[in-house]
Image 1 (spheres, helix red, strand yellow):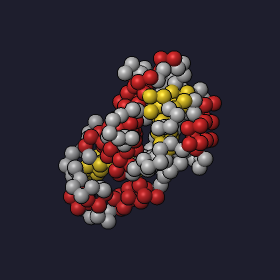
Image 2 (cartoon, one colour):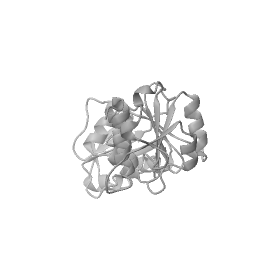
Image 3 (tube, helix red, strand yellow):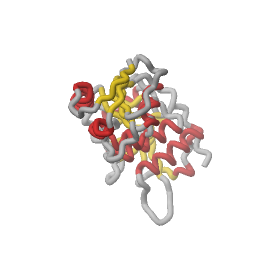
Image 4 (cartoon, one colour):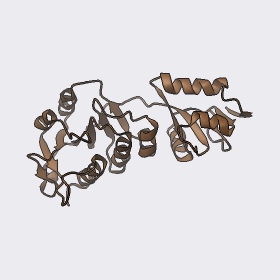
Length: 253
């Protein structure tokens, strides 16, 4: 349903309802900007759309409303919104594919890092991302912006377990090879035998300050490290990108 009447009141019932759903209902969140909104439309997850000028007649079943700049600024999280905001319904989590690599995040707290890792995971053929206890909310505005819409195409599962060992137990039962990142007792990336592994890899990345918990490292099938000059470690999003690239191409560094 596309409305031709422009909403000019910041207290309009449809605007207030969208904000309440995004804030209080676990199954909804807001996205903004043409790129993000168009990806959400293509993935059939938009519940309602608000735009200053552009509407989408190819999606007639999606409720769409023209709004004033003042109304859009109330809906948007950025200071200078691009011109369109959509209320989006979260996809239901699916069982892990167990046929492609999986990314597991152990308390990665920065939403920018989580969003970047989601975007990188999709780029390198990872279909599933498993967020362990303490990881940033993947649906927060900063994470959504960094992910560039990859959430709409990935199976993102947030763990309900406070004990992350239980997450790894689940992954092992589902047939994954558990590969953690560590600076201690780890195989250098250039030497890691990716070609010999006959299972899908679950790559385990850790907290920005503390890294992967030692209990998770001990439970993993193996550990890997990126050797470098000048610094002991890299930002988790950069390290994750290097490792995911190597995993998808089989480690022929």
